[in-house]
Image (cartoon, helix red, strand yellow):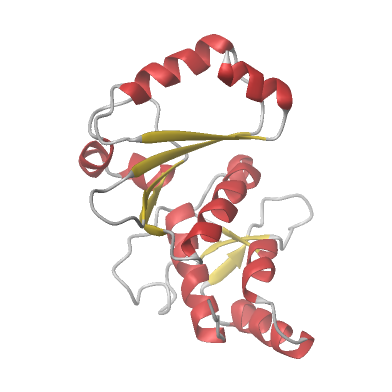
Length: 198
């Protein structure tokens, strides 16, 4: 998909609304794939558009992560309700989720998606999307862009290993949700992978 400067900002705002943040590395990975001059022009447009504010509470006032400036005209142009600013503790984890869904979105492989924060912020909408009440909300829910019936998938990214009992309870929770067709787990460690399988 060809991304121009305007579309790069539009996508950045949309993803920041749905996830509660955006990262510099995400922007550069996906929207800065042209000449060096164009890449810096895109990044300067990001910094100067007034829609993004760096996380001040991160060590050293890091400018790796940004949250939305809710007073910005650009942020309030569409009808997507922002979820609010994401707690810094979850930024790394949620960035992995963001990278995953954008890789599908940019290839037109999904129809729509909902983040954990979106599902948590609206219980009635969450009930309709998931097909039931649950104490365990997935990191992400998305509909594959497939012909015919909706194929709805939940994603869980496991950065750290949890107890077998906790995984078992999450499986029970998800099995009770009538609108979920598939649950996908992403892991980076073999021991986590084995714990989920057992």
